[in-house]
Each structure stands twice: as C-alpha cells, then as structure tokens.
Image (cartoon, rainbow, N blue to C red; front, side, top):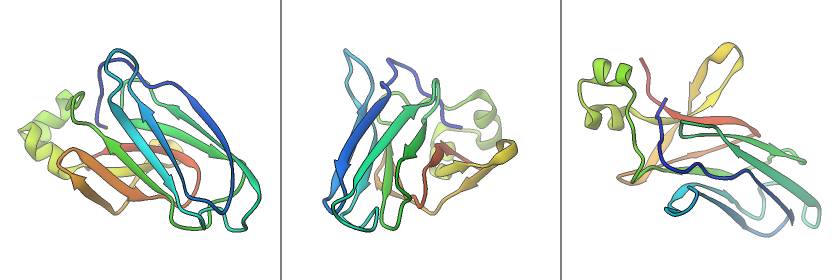
Length: 148
C-alpha cells in the first residue's frame, strides 16, 4: 500500500440531491492543503433524480486510502482519483520488491479492500504522473497499492 506523510485529510460528510453532478475534494490538512483524493459523481451515479443522498468519506491514517459510505447504492459512473504529488512514500517492502520508487509507482493501482485483508486491484488510469483514477461501483474501502 502506498504510504503518506504530512497532515492527514479530515473526515467529510456531504448531503446532496441526486440527478446533479457532484465532486468531493479531500485535502491534506493545513498548512499544505494539497489534494489527497477526489470523488466525482455524475448525475446518474445514484439512479433516480431528486433523492437526498449522504456520502461519508474517512481517510485511512498513514496510507493513500479511504472508507466510503453512502445512504443510496451506486448505479454508475462514480470515479475516485488519488493524488500523491507531495507525500508519496514507498514502503520499505516495495523498495525491495520493485528496486526503485519509480518502478513501484508504475505498478500502482486503485484497489478495493476485500474480506481477510485481500485487495482487488481495479482497472486504473493516470490522469497525470501522480494522479491515479478508477471507476468505483459501490461504497467500500479503497486504497492505492501494487501487487507483491
């Protein structure tokens, strides 16, 4: 799992009406205030329009990861982007396996935490050198990781 340093982002809860696009941006704490992750929900993300939905996001301490809950099920199109331009920190094990931070960074993907601490790596793309994006289909626990 990709580790992070610096001031952690705060927990966030947002309530909004479905049918409109909504973007939630989590930032590392002051004084940095650098983007940690962005969640994008298109108008169809929760299905029917006009319903109230609450999305709760809790960043996981020490890693690029978060716990995501919503009061309505996801329907389609939600996207999660992790941004790690400043606080990228490869764990010691990754340096042994990949032999360099650059090789480790190329192997990273957004993953979903499964039971028994298994990680399902999602199809991920890079919007920029240090921005990793994936479509998410349900609330859950998401993080940035590379295969061992």
